[in-house]
Length: 464
Image (cartoon, rainbow, N blue to C red):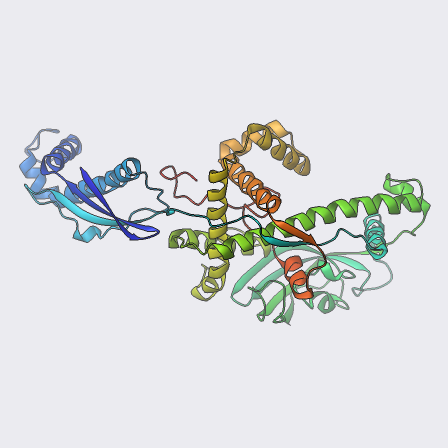
């Protein structure tokens, strides 16, 4: 088998394949011998049907099967011998491939590859880090949150309508634009704006009877809604109240501090909360700087990316959107072209970022030791209330450990970018600050959890 490689684009290769007739004929002979073992024809003993008879009856099918096998083998040969970092299966015009007696089997195939990624100067980026500063109002809000956590929920007595002081469990079905929604149980605090999944839903529930069933609502999602895929859509929902409780809120005093088990006085509790807020804000600010570094890296290196990688990234972003809406696999329709186009730009940058970080990591010799994985798995196990050893076994069995290794490597590379950047501590411009705070944590290279990012490869044939 001869395989010649030609460049089509920086991310596409053409495979020009020629398989000698002797090899084709040998493979055809094997196929007919295997076929003869299972074919029963009148007048012939099982396994003794002549090849000439089999060719007349099954020749077209066998030729197609052998041709398909040789195409797949040529792909594996090309990947192995020419070190192609393939990210997709080859595109072949199968109808144009025909086995002709006495002639070599020749065909062409296009395969997408990661390409030779040359990262430009990634050192000396000009980045901005927000100062870690906790205002007294933030501590007040944290205290109020603790107060809410200590709040008891009691059955409602003496009234029949929902009030702003209530917490309700509702079942919601319907649509938000083209997206189907089916939430069999959703908890909403009618007094907390951040608890409502869609703008206006809380106000629409307040005043409804506690025993509401099948109440129809129509809400207009604002154009500036934080989830751009839902912005400007109309929500048509049917709501049923499953349960409703009213809140018994405790006083802000030393007794509350003792009840939390974290301090003896309200003053001590404030200092404990301030320290926790500072730690969380530092983590958030560090993450903002990493995202800024990644965006700058992508901006400096507008490398071409394979369309198959982009399409997979679009699908991944779509699935994350569905999960956010509480949709299960199989619910709703397929990704339509309009939404696909809206997700494309972000998907391209996401793929570019992963490829560029991988290239920097390779150039700088960044690796992930087992100790690094153990530390991350242990943190995940604590958050999930599991034993680290058991969680690691589950992740290894499910193939998630390799994905986590890839993610940790990308995060270490982001830290390297920040270390070599010129970071100025100051408050960012208002618009930049709003964008940083609104940016979602997407992709393996931008979060600190397990993430959903995958190495940009097609499988075993092309490692990251």
